[in-house]
Image 1 (cartoon, rainbow, N blue to C red):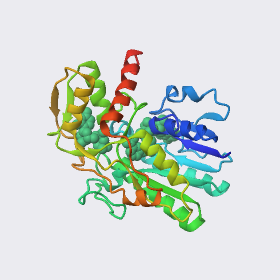
Image 2: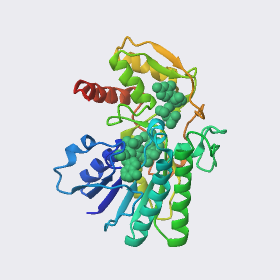
Image 3: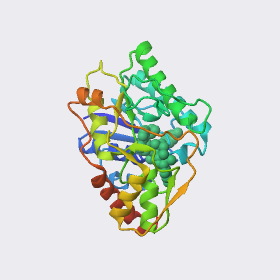
Length: 315
Ligand code: NAD
Ligand code: UDP
C-alpha cells in the first residue's frame, strides 16, 4: 500500500483521482483550500478508512511522509483563475516549489498536472510536446499559462539538480461529472444553459475548435504515467485528438438534452486560442497503448445526467 498526496483533491479532476487511487488500495491524503473545489465532490470518500482530508493552501509548505504526489491544485477555468491572477501564479509557482521541496525531502515521486495552455494560441497543429508554444506573457490568461510554464521549469530543474523523480502531463480540455456548475468552461456552461432553457452563449463565431477528453480517460492516463519507468518524465500530452467547433458542441448539447435553448453569440474573449488539438503519439507509445476511449456523445450523456441531478437538488 502506498501513501499518496493529491493536491487539489476536492476539485473536479482531483476528486476522481482520489477515488481511483483509493479503489486501487492506496492510502490517500487529499489536500485542498476549497477555492474551486467542494466537499460534496469527495463526500462519498469520507468514510473510507484510508482517506484523509486536509484543508491547506499549497502556497504554504506542507509536510507528510508520502510515496507519491499528484500536484493538481490550481483553478483551471478562465473565470476562476482570472478572479485573483496573482494568487493563480502563486499557486502554480510557490505551490510547485513547496510540493517539489516535499518530494525532495521524503523522496516521493511527483506528477505535475500541466496544461495545453503552455502552447498558448498555437501556430502549429496538432501540438506535439516539442513545440514551445505561442504564449502572451502579459495578457488575461498569462497568470495561468505562465504559472504552469514556470512550474514545468521548476519540475525539470528539481529533477536535474536534486534527482527528484518527476512526471509532467499536459492536460487538454477535460470534462465530466463534478465540474463546477459556474466555472465558465464551455462544456459546463452549455449543459447548464441547455438544462435551464437559457440561451447557449457561443463566443465569437463558434468556429474555434477544442478537443474534449472525458475525465475517465484522463485519470487512466495519469495513473499510467505515474507508473512509467523513472527515466520517462514527459512532458506528455493527454487529451482526445478528435476536434470539434464550439458550434458543433452547442448543437450536440441541445440535441442530447432535448432543450429549446437558442444559440446566442457573444464577443470572443482576449487571447482565446482558435484551435487546439493534442498530438498523443508519445502518450500512446509510452503509456502502454493508452488512448481516449469515451467519445463526445457518450461523455456528454454522463455529464448531462450529473448536472441534471445537481440542478434538481437546488445547488
Ligand atoms: P478545479 O478548479 O476543479 O480543481 C482545482 C482544485 O485545486 C480545487 O479543488 C481548488 O479548490 C484547489 N486549489 C486551488 N488553489 C489551491 C491552493 N492554492 N491550495 C490548495 N488547493 C487549491 O479544476 P480541475 O479541472 O480539476 O483541474 C485540476 C488541475 O488540472 C489543475 O492544476 C489544472 O490546471 C489542471 N488542468 C485541468 C484541465 C481541465 O480541462 N480540466 C486542463 C488542463 C489542466
Ligand atoms: N466558450 C464559449 N461559450 C462559453 C464558454 C466558452 O463559446 O460559454 C468558448 C471559449 O471562447 C473557447 C472555448 O469555448 O473558445 C473553450 O473555452 P473554455 O473556457 O472551456 O476552455 P479554454 O479556452 O481554456 O480551452
